[in-house]
Image (cartoon, rainbow, N blue to C red; front, side, top):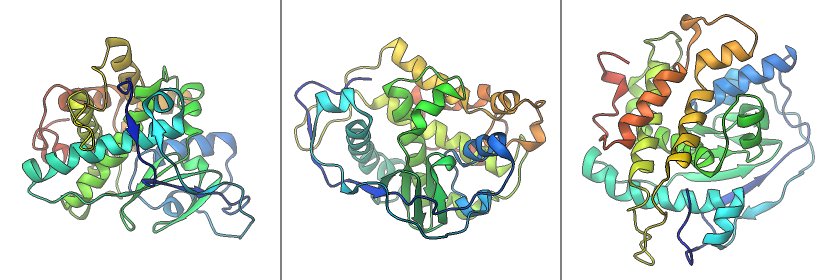
Length: 296
């Protein structure tokens, strides 16, 4: 997925949260436990401390703070930091129009924080092992950009720019769900193939697909030029590969266990690809409403 040449994206939208060395103590269990925690926290709205049992213990800052500055389209196409900044602005432009039209709710910009090592949030403290997540308590998307390498190396995704932007768009999907009041309706404490936890995740995949399907026609309000060039087939496969890689069944296999649908919290690889496709192929918010769907 390529940002149109000559585009310019102002800074000040994505905050650099920095990091804290040793700031969160994560419970035992070795590498597999960290992988499982990372997958469970990928794009979930639950508190990182609820999942990881982290406790704040202080520490010195290790990352740069401030905001991602102004970026050109060329920089957004070549680097994950500027790509995140540009993708966020594309998502803002899309949902500022789409949410009022289809959801009857005025879009509120979520905060976006890029962090390293660890971060304090309205949901508690989290380490980079949690992966990207959305915290409904402070309406903020948190991303450690190093996760994108893990998405390929640990979970088998193809990687690539659209895979990275899919993750961000999914987190924004949780913000849209939160604004629609679905987080309050859903029981996100349970697991299983028909659980609300799975339904909330599949809906966020679908909402991410809605944005991706229209990203080449969503115009930058500052320039009137579309943010992105049309998605190519290889680029679409990047997003589909990322969605499949974080399916519960794929994660369970890669963790060395059997596939246990009763432990699903995000949906199978097939379901995640399916629901992304519903949104991508012209779906609406109502079409994406997995919470009330008769089948997944």
